[in-house]
Amino acid sequence: MGITSSSARRVRRTGPVATAAVLGILAVTAAPALAATDGSADKPAAGAADRPAAGSAKNPEAGRADKPAAGTTTKVQPGSAGKPAAAGKPSAGKPAGSAASAENSAHAAKAANARSAAGIPLAISRLAEGPGRDVAITIDDGPDPRWTPQVLEVLRKNHVKATFCMIGTKAQKYPELVRSVAADGHRLCNHSVDHDVTMDHKPVAYQKQQILEAKAMIEKAAPGVPVGYYRAPGGAFTPDSRAIAAESGMRPLGWSVDPKDWSRPGLPAIISSLEGKLPQQPTVLFHDGGGDRSETVAALEQYLPWLTEQGYRFTFPARTNP
Picture (cartoon, one colour):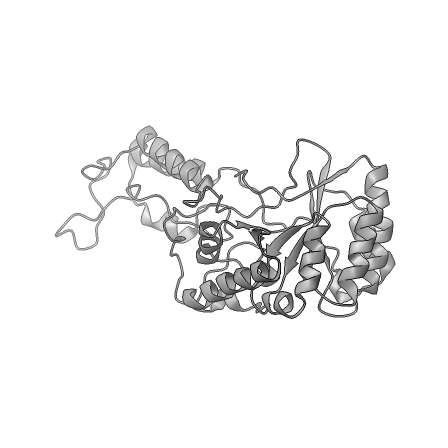
């Protein structure tokens, strides 16, 4: 993430002190952050542009250019008709140079590690749990009476535990499948009430309804089984949706490998994309709902043994790590 041109134009001080302040801002805004390789970077909800997540600082991993921390730009002096303060003189009470850099560094660190009151990070999880060659398999858009049992059977044969991201209305319609998934030791993930991929453009109240009602539907289908993750439909997260999920005990969940099995590109294309260079501790996206998933089942039958041969261990997506 880089500082935007509009942000740069706000800084109009001249001289050594101003230069130091600009460099301080650049150092902070260029701080390393996990790339949103899964397409699930935050998208601002309609009417919510530049509004941070409820009760939290802005998260630097969101796919939007953040403004510099408060107090890093020079204020216009009263009566100056839009002219900046005198060159080389910081505005009253505003740190300059290394002091500004230190303040911004603290702000960025706080945002990157922001957590809900429940202790759940607001950042989108894209890594598998574990210290090394670990991989998390995730299954979206079910449960489905035809394909979910087949996926479960393949996972069972390969001794793999996965995370199932379920649509609320489908969980409500097929509660026995939700219980079958949980009985096999897989984790449950909330995938919204009805998979509205445009919900990032809807009001915050609508996003909250989609998230919380789906969680209730899944929990009702499998009483006592926790729903530990929330995956936005199509990766359409917003700062508000992440905060709502985290405050309800669900880690925002993305992915790092997408074979696009939902588009039915053919088994060779799916396998080729899966067996390419894998990122460290990948979270892999598959589907058991939304249409014909015969290619997905066939791909899992080949891919899971291949991962084992490569020395990978199967685990779940990271839940508590920032």
